[in-house]
Image (cartoon, rainbow, N blue to C red):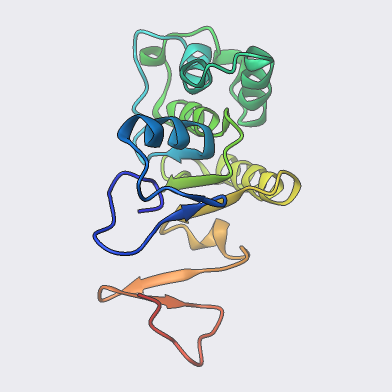
Length: 182
């Protein structure tokens, strides 16, 4: 629901103060591109584009090209692959592709970032760098990161952990209650 990829059958979905429930598909697409960042488990890069072009794509779609290339270069540097920016996406490794996907998900400075196993294809050192970047952005840019992961080592000290077990969601910050959230 929060990714606006599905419509609620009842209730409303508010994101960043906006009721998204009755938006048209076009307005949902625009809202999603500007307010939400997606980091998929599989990078889904466009192989005919360069690394830099893949990162810039959401910004170009949003029509906000001001400082886009500078921002993209900074993100590529932050994820440690600025030296790969002119390579075609099909010429980089899986771990590098994942870092491109992370930069692409962050390029529009979204209010909320939805990340599915963002460190799944990365070595432990790079994973730690990416987690530190996400924590820094959450703190300094007031972004919310919703991360689905099995990597408890790197994400163990986040603000809140929700665990899904047997189809039910539990708040780990209140283990004595183990309240069902959904």
